[in-house]
Image 1: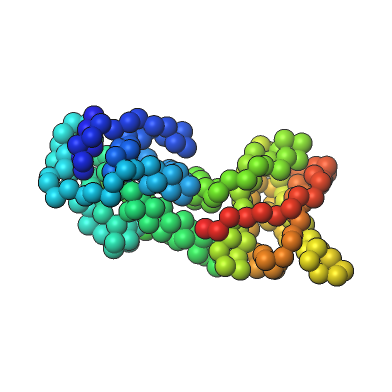
Image 2: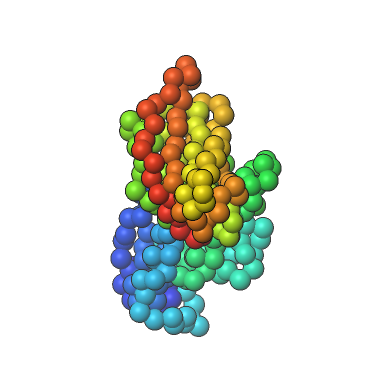
Length: 253
């Protein structure tokens, strides 16, 4: 299958458990219906970096799967004005240029973070996702997926209960998210060792037992040396053994 942009062979790659056609020459990627909504920012960054040229051809572009002429999707609430998406009317797949892919994924995540940060109800699917007319997507599952797609760090395990732990920062905001294998309540213990005496702060992440855990905090100075521990509690009130403190190392969004 050939790239709609540069005509070079595309490679089938698997990212975030999704199959994607990617061109290592121009960096363009072709996503099956709705798949573009299910990849992480870090995956978008890596796909965008995998290219040899920034060339964008002026010729008509055709679907790499069935050769249908690709047409532009008009910018809407879910698509930034400076992002170009080309859609196949037959298979509903989407072709996107590398830099546009990064901008789209960052815009999606920033919108979700905004609603979480201000404790607002999540917006409609149409305001966040690139959807086809036949799309059936759970907003809760998608939101959860987005919240966990940060630069992943080595997970801290509390008896294997925490399946993944992701930490990121944006200026003074610390974003914490993870999943658990069962329903737990959770809190994070943050200790600032750059001050004397060390300052310890406890923050509730999930008050009611759940598998989805997410917190935005501004209570610690992210330029300081911070250690953290995550405490999990079962619905019965029994605490999972506390893991040893670990130095906080976060990536910028």
